[in-house]
Amino acid sequence: MARDVFVTGGTGYVGSPLIEALLARGHIVRALTRAASASRLPAGAVSVTGNALEPAGWTAHIAPADTFVHLIGTPHPSPLKAAEFQSVDLVSVRTAVQAAAAAGVRHFVYVSVAHPAPMMHAFVAVRQQGEAMIADSRLPATILRPWYILGPGHRWPYVLVPMYALMRLVPSLKAGAERLALLPRQAVIDTIVRCIESPPDRLTVLEAPQITRG
Image (cartoon, rainbow, N blue to C red):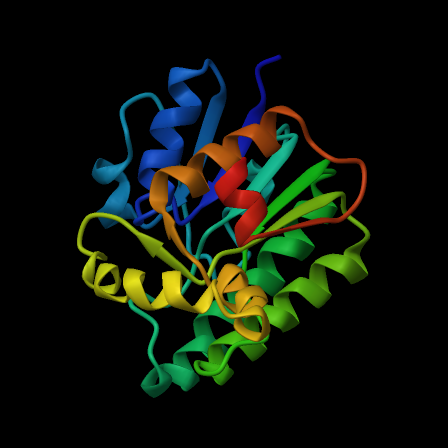
């Protein structure tokens, strides 16, 4: 069945190839974009102009979407960007959840982050708040918890692969190594597509091992 999908962050690292995959499978996609970024949307997607941090002007265009995918976030997160996590990531997910619920969306998809984690505490804390907002909304939702998404321009962590392999051999470290796994971008996209096509009827959380296995 073709889904009607509304996407925020549709011109980003995950959003653009996700939209291409959804369109290729016959789904309808509308994406929130700033006017200057509309030309970067994949061909076939409908642009909805607006600011993800300000609901006025775009939330009325969510309906008749049955699925809302929220991908807005601070680019290249680092411990130095704690203020941006609060002003961008947290504000945008709050706006998205409220708008999706008001529009009658039946499935909310959120890319969070793996936790607990030994670093990036400010980033993790904001994503946990986003997850709590989704849970409080009672929307049927899928929350994905990748730690790092590998792909074009994001390949340096490949040097850590041998370390991860060793950690999996140590019983006390195995669970953490699997939870904080490095995930190929395509695995994340494929998982989101499957969740959109087979939506849950309740809040569902997918950790890295589940994303890797599909």
